[in-house]
Image (tube, each protein chain N blue to C red):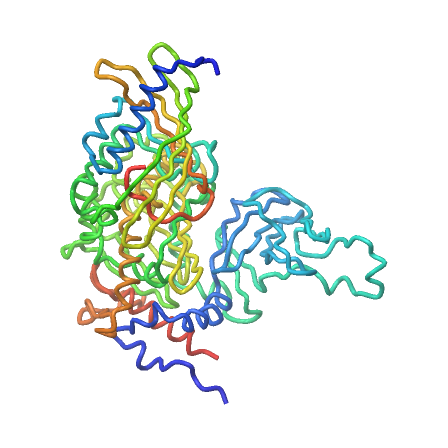
Length: 417
Length: 162
């Protein structure tokens, strides 16, 4: 009875994808149903609402989500819509509230979503109040403080969804002497007139930095350019489930300098280095400080980029917001300050790096409107794809094994019932 | 207004702000950079105007060496978001002397910037606060704070001089 709306065989090939995937509004609507309102999507971090009754405004795609912590410490993802007549319940970006009161007719809700009160209650005789409340994202789960939500009542667990990406989050947390990531620096919101998938693909595209970021590599002393050269020993990896990474550890290990991944050395971060050695022991601390933090795109919307995270929010087929903030690590004051400084320089609307990435997002969005060639070619490094010791598909640092992995997973989701 | 109505100073300061605006619109990078003192701080906050830039993300929080880096990057010709450069026209108005000391003048103003580039035509609006210092070579900027009216919202790329 149901006929497939799209011919995926002709849209997504092994080494190319059709331009309409980025520009067709009907495909975008399908993505909302099959991806954004179904699979696990990153929403926020527990450290953004550390205390009972804290809340912060978040999103899943175009949906506004109020992330709350109720008095019992539990985290809830509530939709921002009064159950009465649909009024937007909350306009504040964050705060502390036990109760959300709708300004329209003063219906009130507890911060776990339950209805608390309705004025002039005699008008609701016989109504079962337990049936009326704020809508909630069906499943909420967190991994090391990273909170994800899924609108599907059933499906793979968050752990299953994360798969090989969980290890990268573990690795990230180890950059803290306390083992804890903090998201406390507030977000820049950077808008691009482009489809969200251009952003997702670009995050682990090791081919573009040498060209898109040539201007800053030319004038700033930065080793980033060398990490993504054709001589780099770094690898691009398809972790499955749409998650992809640029594993830079081979390069950092070759250089072998603690904190070299951050373009510095431990002499300039004496407090941090001492705490790391005390926490992990000399050898392990050395290894952590040489290896650095991961560069991983967790499908569909969490990009951990060594020193910052990006949260990708599609608003429409050709409009996307990148929410970006500096990573902060518990117990690492001197490091945190530098992380913030470096992040502010790199990202956001005026960033040395991201202004130019976003320029490319917008130009590719306009570019794919051209009728021909009908496909983008993503075949770089196909001939040298190989399996690593964990069985993941890898290729050279600048290869498009990552994009191919993203599209393979995307197709599975879009074809699923 | 503790500065009184010092019309001469107001005119001098206004002329300085108009000069800065014209250099920015014309992408006269070296001339604009020369308007800074050696300890200049250039700040564009996000999510409000009174955040702590040492702990919270700003759109831009440049010390003098980072201002220099920004200019160097623009001058490579490979800063794609400014290649070709945005076409710009800005109006500076509502100039007020906020605080006048012997060698430093704090001045408030409003700016509206019309930007035209490949994406679209965009209007930016901000309140600016400059700390100007009197030096041997004339007035120079020791601080500039740009407070976008909509800095709590998602913003498109703005890599021209603001």
